[in-house]
Image (cartoon, rainbow, N blue to C red; front, side, top):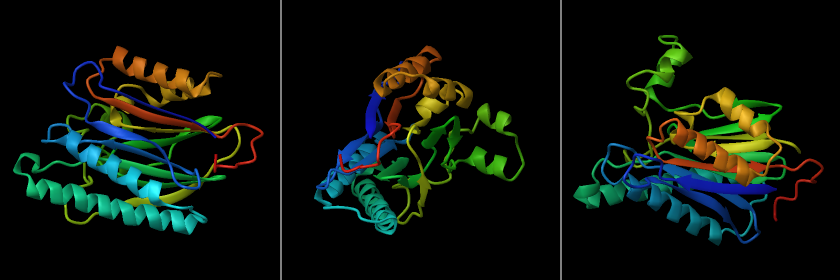
Length: 251
């Protein structure tokens, strides 16, 4: 499996409140984590860093994930533990009161991808065409889902960045946890809204179609978001199931 992670401060923000990475457990299996500290709240960078550090430590201690069920249970349990860490840190440190973060954590098991998700960071699967596989936990997405506004209206809605759910803002949280299939030739994109607020799905698909390395594609995507304003931090992980590979994801 090919993989590449990139984060960029953007052109406007004074600091990068995104965090994440591609991590290996003792069996050399891959966990990807992306967290977007809540903009406009105190210590968003602290919240995302707590999540990144926590998942890295937990995954490095993990010996091996052997089933989808085990992966889903591991992600669900550790999302809850990460939520407690962020919430308790905010409660104990008044300067961090109200902080929170989105999070996407994914485990790759041969031809399955197990996803845990809170917030409006996104996952996309590219298999001939691009498909968003996470559902934004945002106010505008709820309005779209109930038919009150259109998808086009959502893109320019003044409250488009208002989250209905974020990690660390309440004592308990319920993440979306699910598993999808992928196959040789597919690509998988995980990203914060610093990318998707600027680069449309059709343009994302165009980049994902290119016969270039994952690093080249990732750098082009970040550059494009910055060309279009770069008002937010931009973070992404790109992974590819190479054509003809027999799905040994322990390497």
